[in-house]
Length: 489
Image: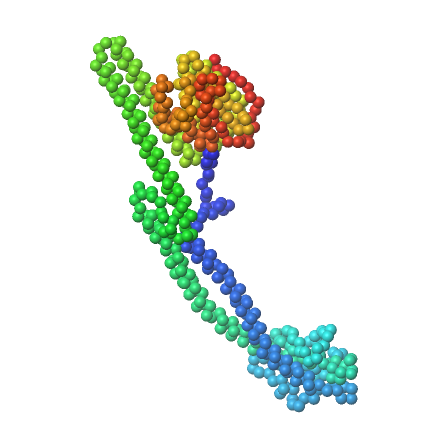
């Protein structure tokens, strides 16, 4: 299939981004980006862990204070009272960092003693002995941790329920949590740059084999297309090296083919030019007008053969170049191309009294390049006319049989089965044909057919003597119309 011409990509919005220029930078980005992404997450996790660590010892001390205060609650004459062995502020001493609050309240909500600033929690559904519960509150604009417990001073009286609470601001807890976080994060500020340096050094050493491979390839001579040993490169690069070796092998094969082509072309060009020079020398020394006229006619014939050979060489070179370069793909009316070529070659066919006809359907479309397809059809029809004796016939037809098909049928000398593959080789000519050809027509046809993913075959003419050349194109979405028939008389 012909390669479609691609528009150059621009570095603007909405366009695909270019491939990364540095493999080292790409790997470094993918290694450092997760590290920098996880670092803030680790700070959050560390802060939560530090809060839990800071809360645990202070919560235990706060719970002990609640139990100590609960032991001071007594019932006298049916009334709940609290007997402090010392002033309450001496028992619940505040320090320079935190303020301590306490409260003893009845089930009805009345405060028996303590600070009114502490709120009342909801009554739990089940009371478990001396279990102490915790909650967070805000007292006088400061965050505070509250430990509380519901108790029954007299177990026999189920309706007698007392709430005991002790609260403490969170300054010491916050300070301890900050020290834990600081102690953990400060080393990270030194570890992360060190990790970046180590990753940089590790990547530099890791891609060192690529640098050695680059130096090895750079030191090669321009003519050295020998393969690189895959075992000498890292395993990750071996598929690339294998593909590179395959490309070098194809390049060497193409270069050898070009060298053979140049040598063969030089040899083929030397023959008509030598003959032309000889005929010109003879004409210069010829005094008889009739002999001079015959010499000039031979010069004209040699010039035509040389011009034909040069044109075919140029066509072959263009077909080969098209295989690598980009050509626009467009729908081509194959039947119209065949008719145009037949009209162009009709004078040659008439001069040999050859019946040149065209059969086919209207507008049989194929995808390809019209100039190259015209060259292919022209070479097929030209070969058929050249190798068909006077009074014969040549028929070019197009038809659709699930895929577009081009056929050129002649009643010429035919091609032996043993030569049907070799005639596609450059400069190969079938002996005994009686015609002087360049041996490039069918190679041009094959090059153009391969460019269009088509298949060329040569068979014996099913109608008798001669050859049937068939070009089968790939399946197309274009539907052919009903066939019609026509002839050039």
